[in-house]
Length: 411
Image (cartoon, rainbow, N blue to C red; front, top):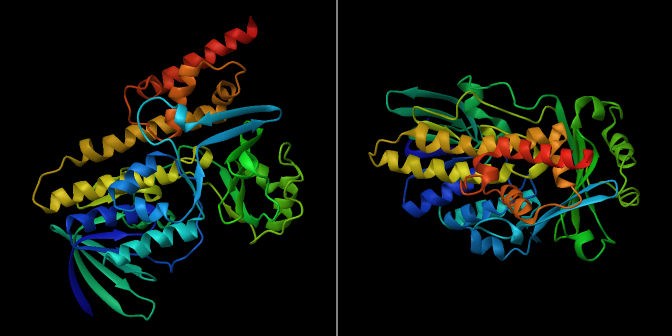
């Protein structure tokens, strides 16, 4: 068995792992990325939010990504019957990026790893972790590649960016009850040969079917569009087990988009993910940190997944690098508490979305421009800006605003 010594092993080559690897490459660290799958591979999480751009820039990816011509995302649109709520990132509160991208993730993630390879980062695709064990101040990791060859890797630190693979969460018994129960998603792609011009064919849109159920439309610059539903398991179950016919029947439930996609073949049999929310007991420990979906996933309604993935991946890489240089890191304060603050903000918004309170705020007929700008900044991913009252006092601010607009209705 071949043996290697590595400073930092990253599990998973998605955006979280790639951003971590990109930062560490710039610092000259000894880093190895282990990826179970072969790229390109399909994965969901196709709508970014502006906070991602800061992280891609710091990890050295921004210029190569700009060259790809991805569909620019300047905001988001929510539709409920005849009501429309538009959010323009250029009108958000505070500093930060005013746009981002909508991306076919198979292509996007491969561009990230191709760029890492060009920077001589060691990425081992189709490699599974057979076992891992913490011994004193290092990890012993046994891997097996697609040819059956095994390696023993000794590492000082592990950054787990394995997403739904949840390698450390499973191996270290870190799984915890999710914040949102019994929600599923079902999604597929179509190739639009007659896509409308302008906003109707460019902007991400969420159509609300009821308080707990909604549909997404995400157009990409290559003519492909992502279509998906999120709702309670019971709602998706009623359409039957055949996923293609079930998805067609779901499309008939739409109002704004009704019949828009009837003439298109589905590019693949719709994929269903049950119980999409994930959680863990804690996101760091002795010699490891969990990032992105390998730690926690809330809900796709505000496209926060890749933002948290890149934010946590970058921060974990920074702290791990300092630690292997001999610095003592307060991981609870500098990592766990920081990430949790952002998660708590988005958790409040997701929770109040499904109570219906946030939906009433979004679709208020005469929104206050200042308040809308502050909420828009949250939707853009700037959930650590304590100058924003809808971040600093997120739960109380939303509740008070809902009570105010409810009083206006009574009057």
